[in-house]
Image (tube, rainbow, N blue to C red; front, side, top):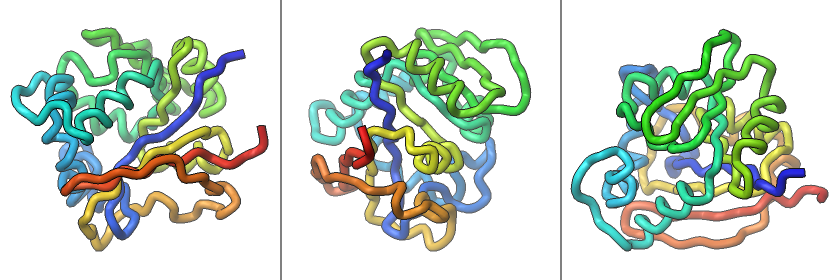
Length: 210
C-alpha cells in the first residue's frame, strides 16, 4: 500500500478567497488573484521553474517553493485549472511529474517537456488519486486545484495535510475556499507557521481516523 500523503498547498486572501471573479483562460484564477501570489513570483526557485531570470534565492519564501515541488511526485487537478493553465504554461510546465486531470471528456495523455504528462481521468477523484499514488512512489500527491477540486478532496476526507498561504489583501468578492465545507471535514492540527512581508504560511495536518 502506498505511503504517499495527499495534500493541498494554496493561496487565499484575508477574506478567504482562493479565486477572484471572472476566472477564465484569459484571466487565470480571476480578478485580483495575481496579487495573492505576488510572493511566489519574487522567489528564484519559482522563476527558475518558469524559465524567468531573477528572484530572491534562499529566503524563507523561496525555501517554501523548493519544498512543495520537491515533495510532490504526482498531481491531481480539475479540468477548469487545466483549461486556464494550458494557454499560460510554458512548453516545459512547472510540474515535472505526472498530472491527473479530472474531466468528463476523454483525451489521450498530453506529454510535455521536462517530465510532465497530463493524464485525463473520467471516472472521478478516487480513480485519479489511485493513479497518482501509484505514480508518486515514495513522494506525495498534491491536489493542485482549482477550488472545486480542493473542496471535493476536503469533503471526501482524503487529505492528510494542507498548507495555506495567506496574503494580506482583500479581494472583496470571489470564490471562498471553505464555503460549503462541512465543519467536521476541517478538523486541523497546527504544524508550523512562518511569514514574510508578503505572505503568512500556515501548515496543518488533518485530524482524522487512522
